[in-house]
Length: 140
Image 1: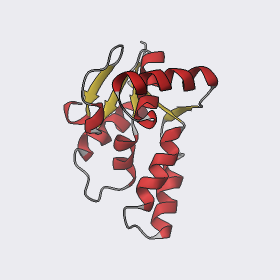
Image 2 (image 1 turned 90 degrees about the horizontal axis):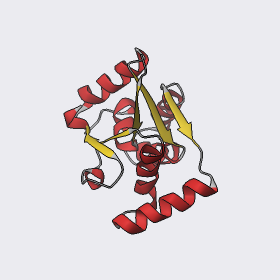
Image 3 (image 1 turned 180 degrees about the horizontal axis):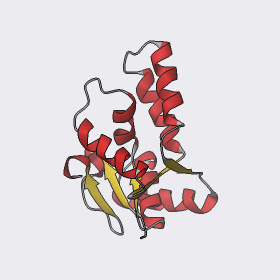
Image 4 (image 1 turned 45 degrees about the vertical axis):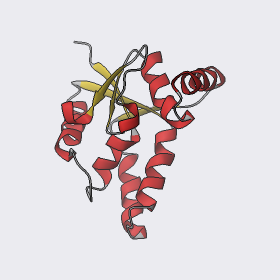
């Protein structure tokens, strides 16, 4: 049985690392559970690691808690994809075409490239974008 492929954006991952002021934590936990049972495969652009670090930094957590969150991030069942010239150019085109940030377009580009569903808690991603299926975490 082939596992369904999902791109998970940073807004979902942060729910696994700090539950303070986060909605839809049970849905995020279900995604992680499904990945651990190998029902789904989770991927994300390398950029997510930087966004998570930044999100944890600004959640008013103490340094040991942020470090624990970062340690946990590297243990999650996620395959991270690095940026190369081809992806960088595609991200640029997606960002310009859809009038979104380069950062947001990185997740969309990977979902499009890998024919994966993008799961997000980021309202900016909730509209339909050509060539990629986007699912709001509340609907997972």
